[in-house]
Amino acid sequence: MTTELGRRLAARRAAAGMSRDELGGRCGADAHYIASLEDGVALPTVGVLVRIADALGTTVDALAGTRTARDPVRPARPPHTDAQPVVLDEEECRRLLGVRGIGRIALFTVDGPAVHPVNYLMAGGEIVFRTGADTLLARAASTEAAFEVERIDEVAARGWSVLAVGVLEAVSQSDALERLAEAAHATPWAGGDRTHWMKLAPQRLTGRRVEFRP
Image (tube, rainbow, N blue to C red; front, side, top):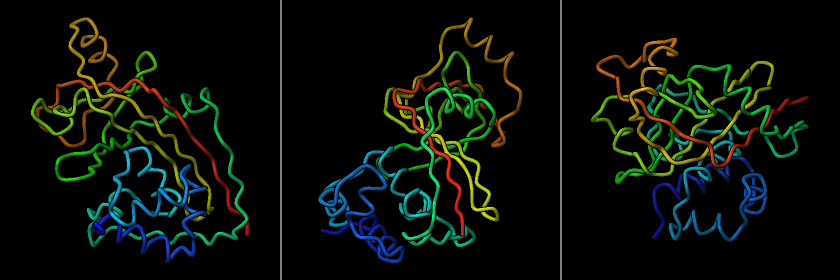
């Protein structure tokens, strides 16, 4: 039975003028896997869902059906556009992670995919952020999650993105908590009592920079 995610994926792919082979090639899958997603036979991992959304010029929220009416829909660029993608090495990915203070955590819940913006910092090669002790993010400890940070200039048609995939863990050591409290340079925008620190040690770290030329 086709799922809502499968229907949105198929519609977005058709609107972008891509075949299943083309979409699979852009996100590291094959046509049979894309077909299984569209037919509701398979459920993508967080990392695959992020790559599919990126390849289609949309967001995970839009594919998952959580985009609001105010959110813009970015038109997917036609396959023939002269793009100049550059795969980033791990050193460059880590450097870019260190220059941004806001990213997105993507994870699966019982209600489906969920994406949460967070203020973050890098500490000892790990991505760390604060949340509430009883939030969805805190309850996701010991589960796989993806973290993405990006900078997009739609006017100049260029940008970069870095994706880290790993296991979310709570920070519990008192000395580590003290160091993080001292290193924190921003108050979480969400407000409230957000003193519960979480960390994600990247097990897979990928990134790319793209410039489009007319």
